[in-house]
Image (cartoon, helix red, strand yellow):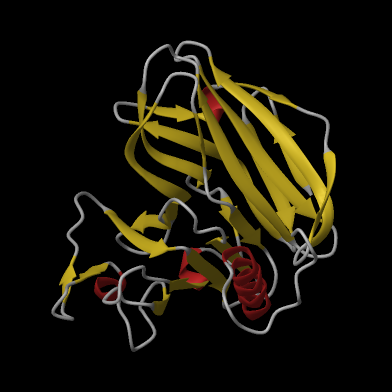
Length: 278
């Protein structure tokens, strides 16, 4: 079930007993952040869709505008009938009269307390992925580790000599960064949340989980595409990669993500043949 609060530019999802509350999207410019919660947002009539891997579903499109900046966005939410998953993508249109610098498109942004999964952060195991050969791919249990990795490992930077440099964070927070694919799993309930960018055409994509240093509270969770401050000309548009948000069992969700990404990106492996023209 998805709840839309158009007047707030926020979205809440309840699937498989997991709740994402007051979710929004964000457009990061060089000097400011445009939040959907601060936009004028209106919904369009839903459309029926069909996907080779994800099946039949419905497409919801929301048009959001920031009149002062004269920037518009189309936020696409695709819901599927047979699986507890949705797909998200974002299009940005610049009507400002001048070029704007795009740093980041955040398709999913959750604040403190907005992710209801299992019994909370100290019940969670996170799988984080890396984009470079020396990035540390790992699974970590919050609130004490699992005997193999600790928080210094999963927040470290991989160096070219295969060593790792621990990141130092100011204040009372820790950030866990992951590339492309992230899974959060509840040890108590068996519930899982996968967020994974399954198109890899133009942008590097990441998630960032921020918690307190005691690893007891989630402060924010964000899935975003890097745009490296590209200049978007007046009248031009920019399209994000596509994000899969899957609430199914963790390994089944990973298989679904891998099959979808392989089909879209032309990877090799065991997957159903494509229909002509797909």
